[in-house]
Image (cartoon, rainbow, N blue to C red; front, side, top):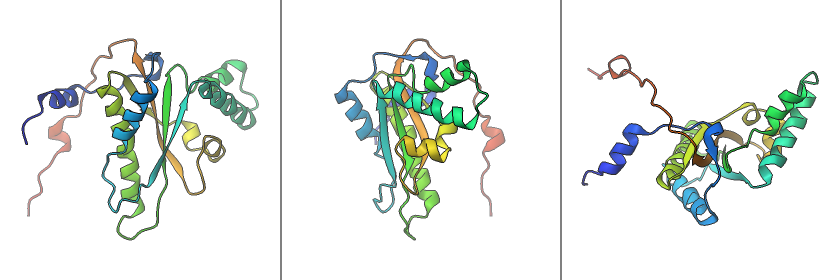
Length: 192
């Protein structure tokens, strides 16, 4: 296989862009379909598709945020209006967010950990796909990804759980690179 210099250079410089720096325009319907199609091209031993995707865009972003604020108000009645506003804005300003759910299928050929890793790969592939189309992305998972009531409100079904939320939009800034892992510290070579 020939060297793909553009892909190599992208992977060497890939950097998430925080939600606060993601603005309109977001992907068009056709671009989003392409992002979704690329996103699910991941290792999936047994072809179980142990994941589902939930798109939150348009007015649904504010509506979901209102519902998160309601849940948080029940959890923490002392939370002031500024705190509730943070919850209302969980899916803003990014134009689109894709929630990735682990939807495990019992199978001895692919234990749940392998299915979870496949779902994690969907998250990362969605991010790569967004960048490939000229957008930027941020993979997060906040309290609502772990809270059973919030998960259900956002579309999780029995036995499913969120593994990430991919926020996508047009970047408003260039994010400086950060220190990367020291390979000498984290890589070893197996020896008999």
